[in-house]
Length: 566
Image 1 (cartoon, rainbow, N blue to C red):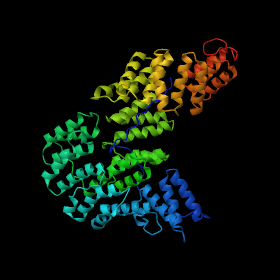
Image 2 (cartoon, one colour):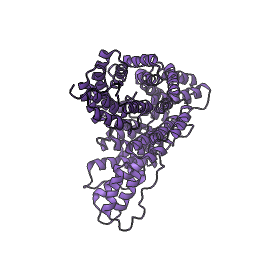
Image 3 (tube, helix red, strand yellow):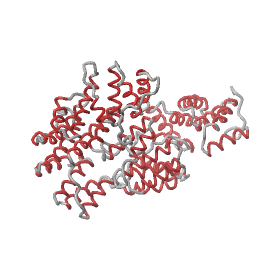
Image 4 (tube, rainbow, N blue to C red):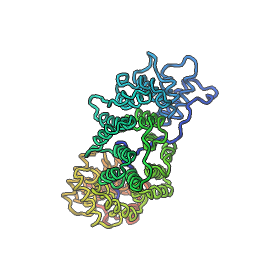
């Protein structure tokens, strides 16, 4: 049975691993332009490459165009943007827009880039001036505010480095600014004040994994390994699957060397992650990618940033860059499992299922929960439902409070294995936890409809799902199939025609429409729909169903159709 299913691509949680554009930074300096190329032609080529998400290629074209005589200032602005997005921060800093004709947005980003480049090069005083909160405006004010104390530390201005940054109305700056202040108090050997801040940012539900790891590292460096173990264990009580927390707990418990305090560059890179996550959440992808490139200029080994870049590049269609980014974390990195899992999906989407499963199995072996979820999803996508269900059972048993999506995914696997009682129990458990989730309402509602049970409840569920997602072909199909099962074939045709318009390439929807046409006496249209099903790569069950109806000439119930109008 085909229904839409939420896929567990590793979730983009605030400041967790995401993705990065995986090539090492290369210069965007121009190659020799093609013979006969014009500045305008190179500009257009750069625009096309930038629109396709290929920022490295775009940077080369724009740089070629920029170096031509009497070039339009817009070309220089585009060259700056492309250099930044491709990761060539030094080039971007060198050509950052400053003139009166440059757009204000480009000048604001340019100032941030020049400031970060100075900070990365150890030039603390100019970095401190450029990154001062009063010198920066929307949308980069929060980023500058979080970077400013690290620039002050680089400049040797200890007192300024210890002032907690604030931006009115931005609680993210309050929280991560206090975390940065804790690290800088430690750097200044003011340990009691550092611990006060660390306790504040790890208290109760406020604690982020980043803050817990930072406080735990501080405790380990102070020789308080038992306190560090207790802190990690408390955090793991909320999520046993965290690779980083488990590794930190093991390190502290076995008396291994404490992690080093972050350098100024490393601390600044970590500080910039929070505004990056905000930009991603706000779908400001270009700014987010620019911030990630700045993070990696400060700390090239920041693997969570590499993964975020990879996600952005994959979404933009630059699979090669995404794969390089996902491959960046080494096997010893906490992000290795997540990176390999994301890499596996790029091969699955390219129909290289063997490579996808091989990579996913290797990633899952790291113990990373997201990697194990990815393997479960890939197994299900490749019709290996039993192994998928077993993996999901392990994750459910491990979780203190299992996510509803775990039950949903396992319910789908059980349903495909024809283990309906177990599937139904899981789908109902998921729905109890998430009663208004359209995907769940649709899947369980359709399953009941297809079995001819609980039709009244099922009808209400799919109606609710369609109301939430009226442009979903799968959900409208469920509603049409509900009418069909209830014998209201005219309404079934109306809804199923809508569903086919919304999702013309879905074999099951087309098969359903053929059945409904047959029931209202539209035999030729029914035969057309079933023939069409066979061109749409149906699964074995749908293919056999369509072939049987075509071969017998007797339709879905093995009986001849009534005449149209009867």
